Image (cartoon, rainbow over the protein chains, first blue to last red):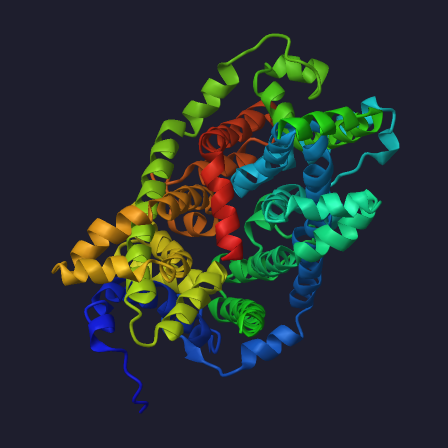
Length: 299
Length: 283
């Protein structure tokens, strides 16, 4: 028992405010989490009582081609949600802030930024409806290619097993770009304008200012974007559900969707729980390493 | 400022207009999908079959939109989405305010451990919780009901709100609270009269952010709100995808109906939303 106490006048009387939030979070979030982990050690159809089988579900995972496919696809999803939007976002933010904003005013910047951010606020289910419509074999994209005389480029964008994942990646970039862009532009606002001016007076080109001033200054934002979107990528579900349903075959399957199938379509709750426990663990590891690193930097 | 504005304006050249044009084209390309569904939602089926998806509608025909509106009972979906989202905002903000008051201002014991806990539950994927919740909700009679769903999502967001508000509160001027304490104000009075009014800027940003998140929720409403009377806007519309594949103008209209509420919301609350995204990420 440690004997470091808060001065009574300070800490006392506040704990009661923590009670409702803490209890409800334990009940609705922590308890289900533990239950999922428990189910992952059982064989269970969702009715009757679970049969304890130890780590069998996990060994089954290791030999499951769908599981490995879902993790390979996650790498693509992270590319589409984290890496490409961050790189594009950096470039566009610098272009908007350090070039267009200075020559054409902040109004133009705000307008362009809003346009690029808009996909972020549209419900993913509706985004899926919209893109499914456009990417359908007879959809708008193929008509456009046809009209432009590029009929040979028309594809069954979401139905071709070799192409579906790349198409999904494109839609993910479309959804995600606004997030880093908004963060980066707001991060650039804390830069002392004289820094840029001094750099330009010294004859630094736009590209030099980008690599020597903008990117280093935005390092915290880049880090945050990469971590949060990587976590979002590990969890990705809705985007896949509405665009491809994991198919064709397992070409766009992701772990969360794979877990969902086992829970609600195959009534293999134990196996689904093993998949979702694995994702949860991965997410907590990524978030944990981020936090400890951040804490270390703050000290 | 004015001299600099003049100086920069004089530096505008053909090159700078070309850059603006390029980024504008990119932005328009980004927005093109919205334009495409807008055009096709107003076409008659005959018009669509004759001229395809890229033409301007022969006449602006509201029938398809009206028809889809009725088929999905869009009024009911809107009511459901507004009800649940407002409920979620209320629950999440109140719980977060209480939590953060205890952690950020009260500095209760083990506050770091509690913060780590809230942060942890904040990142846990819904996929990791959904089955037990589905099961428990069935047992408790909360399944396919807006009440249980709203409470669940509210609690989920309160974890994020706690984290955000606690860091704001840890910089709260202590003299104010100590002075009020001296005057005999209790914890409740201090929260209500001093802390709450001073944290409105953060709270309002949180409200906007939570409203959008809640409106756009997918997995929980998919699993927990399955009946027509309880479905939210995005889920109610995405059902169309399976049912009306052979009816392109109706699908387009469904997408348009789903897009409009959030575009309106975005235009109204753009500023708070942008601030929320920034605060949420960097804090």
